[in-house]
Amino acid sequence: MHKSIEKIFNPPADGNCGFHVVEKGLSLSIPQKEKSWREVRPDLIEEIGRTHNYYNQILGEAVEMDKIRDNLMDTAITRIDNLLSKCDHGHILTNIHKGPFVIFHPDWKNFPPQPFLSNLCSSLEVSIIHPISLGHISGNHLIFIIFN
Image (cartoon, rainbow, N blue to C red):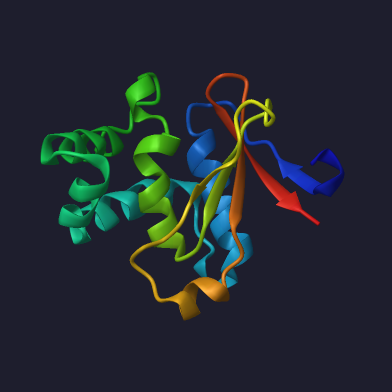
């Protein structure tokens, strides 16, 4: 797999690395969507509000979705609850992107890639969007991976 990697974007480890890599992926795959990493969090909150019932079915009870939304609204970077979570946010991110997100673990033989596919977009929308690939390293740090 390492031979297939063209480039890696390793954001600062400031508690917002997940939001940095999502912004990088969105701006490369959909150039007109270029935005600051600070805009990713409000986009997630807006997506949750727009399709709250859908995410309740996917992720569990409304209480869980409210907790995810509340953690996104709290911008303090010192709490682990406020970090981008692949499990909590993967489905939401793929629907904002309108294309697949894939999370890779450094021990990819024991932890296979974890894809998130959009259920809220047409297949035509998804077919023109490149996947966004994130690497999960050093416990809770995310990097952006560009493949050949």
